[in-house]
Length: 236
Image (tube, rainbow, N blue to C red; front, side, top):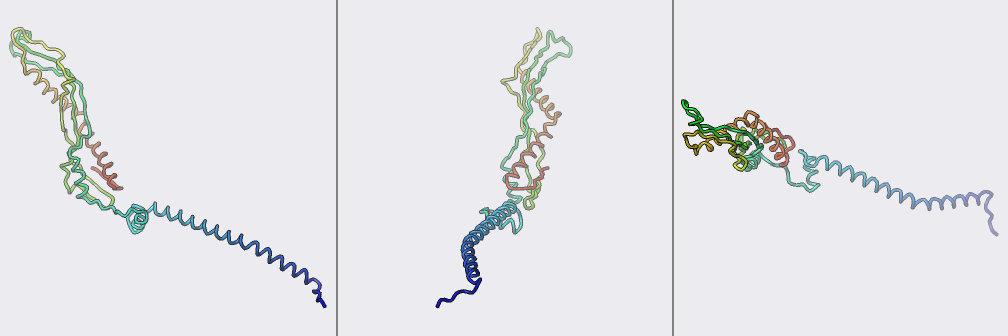
């Protein structure tokens, strides 16, 4: 004899079976959601770690050391004062400014008693000259360099004039007059060139060539030292 289920029991069994089917279908979706959430967390942690490494790489302290190691930069910054002095001294004469002058210079020979028309010798020289100035870094003293970690302070040697010269290709005698009773002095032009060099040097000095040379040298040194890895640079 078949046993009939109690009233409502069939519906309850059908409901239980339906819930089991729903739970079975949702399990793969829940697992996929968990995997997706895990991947998102993994990428978020990776990005945060990369940002941390970039911020601390190259800095001092334990964090900087760890970051540099993990990023493959295992060579620590160890530039010392003697190293800085040695590298700067190798530059020797650092030419930082060139001053060009075009001028007219007079040279003459005169007689204190007799007129120039008879015994004088005079010329006008159109001159193109150049003055070069800078800093002789071979004179840099070790005590003039102070290194503290990635900070460096340098006291440069005094700026100086390196060369003063006349450009012969652009320099010529504009006019010359010689007295009727004398011969032209063969040394007058060379003496006038020497006078022109002195005048050009004086003009360059008056215009502040030495100050400009020092200012330019400071800029060059700052670029060099930052290239060596220093973060705080003071050049005096």
